[in-house]
Length: 219
Image 1 (cartoon, one colour):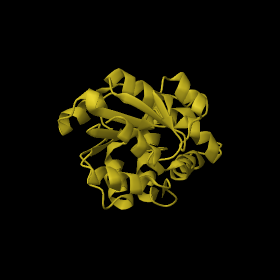
Image 2 (spheres, one colour):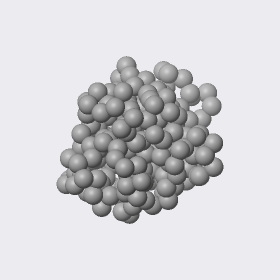
Image 3 (cartoon, rainbow, N blue to C red):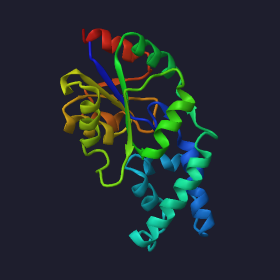
Image 4 (spheres, rainbow, N blue to C red):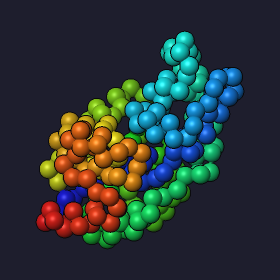
């Protein structure tokens, strides 16, 4: 059985879309720019906070000089409101609990700002003991660069061959492949099956509880 399961956060553990959209739209409104529908953020998120801000800004404003202060404003607002509408995907807590009881190590690898990761996990999963929680950090490339996975493997003492990586986007599948861990796509998140298949997901599951069956099948 795999010794370590790494989870993406947004669209895999938590449905954070509305809070992300609200924070981003707040920044746009403050600057007098048009806002975007919540559903559009399914494709704006996934490549880190800087890329999110770049994607939502109107043409002519996608410059580092403008993105940087907008990103700071976004992080302040999001940190204050990241629990407002975010919800746990049905079945996730039960699956995490089962894995923890089995002695499987649990980690999060996300392009969300690192400062937000631990508070979110503590708020929504207070009974889960995470072995590693790593978000976007200054000076470290974001996913699909595999560094975050390498850092988790080092922190947990696990090998790539002992690890599953779950995510809902092509970025996650690419990250897993680059790191040499098994890529598991999930269908309850932000992106469709076609994207996960095209990105080379080795397995695709439709419900969190299917992960337990997958784990058993890898004995």
